[in-house]
Length: 303
Image 1 (cartoon, rainbow, N blue to C red):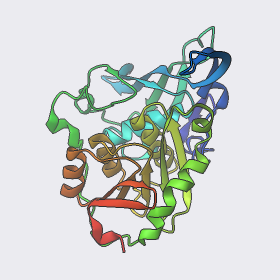
Image 2: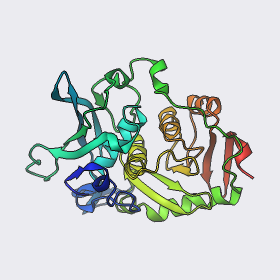
Image 3: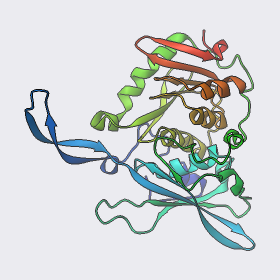
């Protein structure tokens, strides 16, 4: 990924390449000892997923001067950081159009041991009216849950709109059955480490368009949505989203912000995820594996 994006045209460059994560920063090697049940042991080097903090800052104009403000720290797998930041700001309702982004750049010195920059600044156009109340989180967001810092349950909706057509798009059940294998084949870093979540977008025929991986399930989805947002392709009203783990409330919320009508999960949905998907007209499927899946709401779209 380029060190900085300047303007929309360069923002979209390489954004939607399938499975793009910098291998050098996505995983590392560490010495381990494996202990067997018979107490025998062996020493070797294992490949593990990298988890590093990312501070997301926004630069904006207020009272005639430029201001830079930190809005979140999330624990993420380095790689696709600009997409992550853009997706986060879009799904939080801060950004609505890619032209609102002037540039996205890393800043600060890289860490001496890993060479990773962990601060990212999203410079907004001068005419963007930044509503910081939409970012009423605690400053720290863990990699496993991006919603726990919300100040109130009411803030979780973040302006999501109801999916307008309960009968569009129509897909065959066989399409859903094919998604996990397509996702698994594209999880490059997961194959190395076994330690990353993934989110993937498919068209209505089941063709994979984009996949992103991260230690945080919400980060992986922000990377996918951010790539499409920067490419000017949001809303994603004719796409299918597959997530590698469970379907949480926040993943449904983020998918709704992007206008995604169908969300499928390899794991189980939560009760709030089902309630939100049902309220906003989304199709939600869970346990999509081993040749079966459950439909929790919105079954009209699946033939």
